[in-house]
Amino acid sequence: MMKKRFIATALIATMVLSMTACGGKDSDTESQGKETAQKRSGQYELDTDKLVTKLADYKKFDIQLTQDYAVTDEKINANLDAILAQASGNYKEVTDRDTIEKGDYVLVDYTGYLDGEAFDRGAAQNQYVYVSDDNGYIPGFTDGLVGAKVGTTVTSDVTFPDPYTNNPDLAGKETQFEFVIHGIYTMDKLTKDNLTDEIVEKNFKDAYGVSTVDELKDYAKNYTQQYMDYQKNSEVVTLVKKYMIDHSTVEVPEEYLELRLNEYIAQFEKKNVTSDYKDLDDYLTKTYNMSLDQAKEEWKSLMTDTIKTELIFEKVAHEEGLKVEDESLQKYIDSSVQNYGFSSEEDLYNSFGNGNTDEGRVYIERLYLINTAIDLVVKNANIKEQA
Image (cartoon, rainbow, N blue to C red):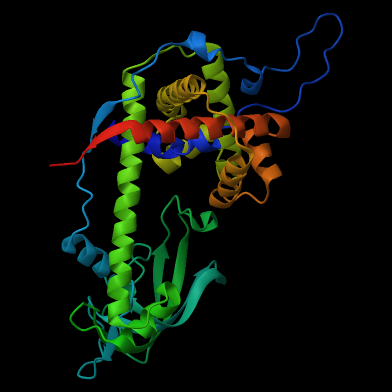
C-alpha cells in the first residue's frame, strides 16, 4: 500500500499548479428543455466564508522540521562525490590478456538489430561499456561479451524489458547486438584525492563552468547550500499547509470535487495514454502496477486536500485584504510559463482552463492569491529546527 501511495502521490504531485479549472465553452441550449453541456469546475461558485467555518490561527504557530538542513562538510563531500561519479575517469588499457572478464571496461562499436534491420538509437562507436549486471544498460546487454577476445566481432541475443518507456516499439522484443571489440580497459574512478585542474577542466567545464579543483569544490558547496535551502523551504510549506488543514474546518462540495477530479483524470489520460495502451487502466497497470480504481481512490483523497488548501488560503487572503497586484501577478505568470514549459501566456491559460482561456486566466489569478497567502502564513510560522 505504501508503494501505491507513493506512486499516486507522484502522479498528482503537481496538481495544485497544473490542475485545470474548467472545461471547454458551453454548447448552445437545445430546444425542449434539453440539458446544456456538463458543468465545468470553473463555473462552480465557491463561497469561501460558508465553506471554511473555522480558520486555524495563522498569526502565530509552531512547526517542527523533521530533517536537519544544516550544510555540513559531509553533505558537501557527498554532493562532490556524486558530481565526480558522472565523469568517466581515466581508462587504462589491459595488455596482459585479450579475453574479456566480468568487471572489465571494453571499448566497442555496437549495433542493435530487430528482425535483421538496424533500429534507431541502437548504435554507438568507440564506446566504453562496463561488463556488469549493473551498468545502466538493459538487462543482459553485455552478457555475450564475457569470454570474447579483443579484435573479434560477437553477436548477442538481448530481449528488451516490457514495458520499455524509452522506446515502446522495442518492448518485449528479441533483438541482436553486434559488438566489434577494440580493447579491454580498467578505469580509475575520479575521487577528491586524484583530482587535478586539468581533469576538472576536461570533465566539468562545459557542464558546470568550472576549470579548477577549488572552483569545483566551491560549486559543490554552493549547490549543497541551495539544495538544503530548497528542501527546507519545501518542508516548511508542506508543514504549514498540513497545520492549516488540521486546525481548520472546511467543507468540500462533493459535486465540485468530482468535477475537479474528472477534469484532472481526463487531462492525465490525454497526456499519457498513447496507442501503446488499450486505455487508462491498462496504462496504470503496466506503468505503475496499480488499477484505475486504486488510482482514483488515491487521487480523490489528494484532490480533497488540494481543494481544502485552496479554500483555506483564499480565506486567509480575504481576511488579510490581499489584492492582485499587476506587476507581481505578471512575474508569477512569467515564472509559471517558464518553469512548466508553456510556450506562451495563452498556452498557460488554455491548459489551466482546459481550452477556455478566460476561465484559465481567472484560475491563474486565484492561484496567485493563494500562493501569496501561503507566503504570508509561512512568514508567521515559528520554525523549530531538527535537534
